[in-house]
Image (cartoon, rainbow, N blue to C red; front, side, top):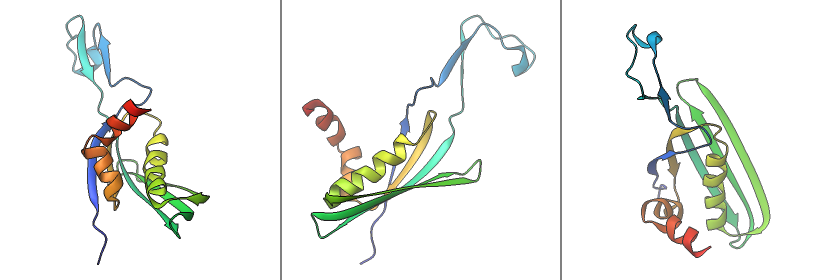
Length: 133
């Protein structure tokens, strides 16, 4: 049976803010903006494909994350391995490392074949895990 892929779309807030308050901006069309007007920056879009595996489970595992910037036409691959781990841990590590690689606030499409990662981001598991420590 072919793996099922889920697309999880969320906004990732990195170190830089996504809005800037300007007193005036004549370069944006010739007319100054009203004092205090908010101009939204267009966030770059990044597509992340991530996967992890372990054999046997638990045992030796590895993960990979492919980041694609469609606008810039660039790709970057991140990989890693651990000697004693689980399949779910490698799946989560791939997603986390892909998101950690982002340097600015982005619109992210995260693609995974893991139900564990999918449910963690869509069923509120991440929030529960953060509350539980």
